Image 1 (spheres, helix red, strand yellow):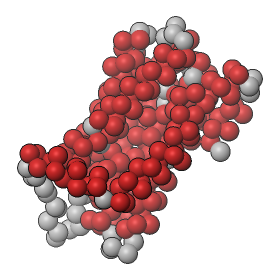
Image 2: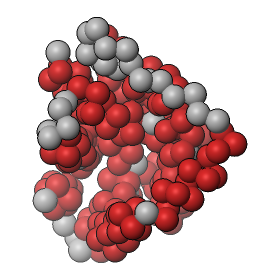
Image 3: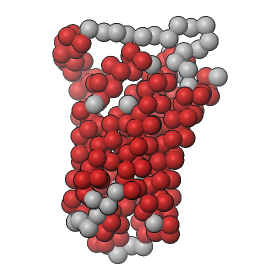
Image 4: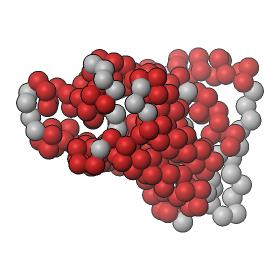
Length: 254
């Protein structure tokens, strides 16, 4: 049951990463669909990531109060709705709404998945399983860069995003059916913390040296890769360098 719960959480996170990266890898296709320059399409992504960042603390509070099963299920459903909106809209305003919904749902998934690890695994395995959760989830980006890009060229915009929405719906169903917040016989941990204490708690976390180390490590090493993979990579490879879509997808995967 431990592995069933964890693998289900990883699958849900992988689908979340697929939704997160599904617009950036479309590049010029998205620009043509919305009749907007690539810079505007990139703005959709910036807005999505801003929503994702702003909601991290509310997401953590929600996971503490409701548990991972409810939060992963609900977050996946919100992303499903967002991708359906993206499939059906042809306007920039609809795309903004769609990416806000995707960013909102995405914000809740990873933290909820990570919270399951110490509940189901012994302490000596927790660091390794935590890292594996993040790494394996990135296969969702491979699905975007290869599968969705190939599909949008062969089947069109609407079918591609409806399929992406279907992936999020599958993640919601699996999470609801298979994830449990704690092993049988163990009471799931719930925290109804006082919100008024939140600023003090955040300040305490920020003041810890490991938090600052993590922040600057992510900021310095992750920034360029994220900008390339989520916004400018596919347009640059196909338009500026003249690579084929298949070659660009392979390079993005590597």
